[in-house]
Amino acid sequence: MKQSHLRVTVLLLVAFFVATGFSFNKRMDLSHYRLNGMELCFNVPNEFDLIELRTSPVSYNLFLGKTYVGFKEALGFKESRGDYAIINQFGYMGKYQFAKATLQMIGIKNSENFLEDTYMQEKAFEAYTSRNKWILRKDIKRYKGRTIGGVYITESGILAAAHLAGAGNVKKFLRSEGAEGFADANGTSIRYYLKKFSGYDTSFIKANKKARAI
Image (cartoon, rainbow, N blue to C red):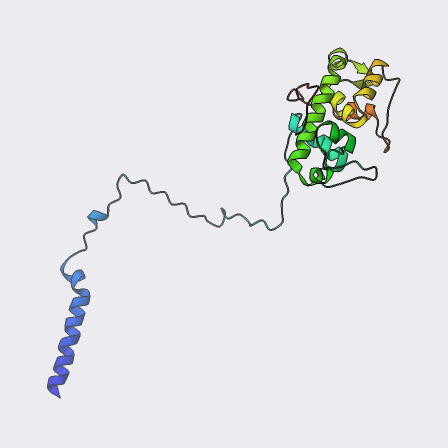
């Protein structure tokens, strides 16, 4: 019995010295853990740095200004609110509201494919505007910078009005000093388009008598 107690005592003493031997006999050398010269930057936010998570959606409006992209997007929004698939009650189609006859003139025969192809619609706008710029090239040069019918005339305003009313009607308006006007079926006038789309940079559009979308 005494021997068993002695064994237990010895084992406890051995365990104690093993567990505490390092602290009794020597101090732990941490010199090889030195961090001199190392760039360690740890930023832990405190309660003042925490930002409340935003749970409500935020919408941003892309600022396009008076660029060419701004011009065509503004015109597309006015025509159809930017809807590529729309057909209005008069049969005008797509984002820029083209008539079938206009599409055929710039090389587009299939109107169903046209409505489903956003790239083709953008090419159609570019081609049609290029044609109008060629037709109106002399009028742009002659009337740009003047005020006609109470509206300051710019190249972008002329091209927008031609999209609405056709180049021929814009010629009549300018050459009659505003006496011969035009309004579409919704009552939108050349004068309104000349003013609303004034001052955009349309230098990207090159005058081309035979411009085609495809």
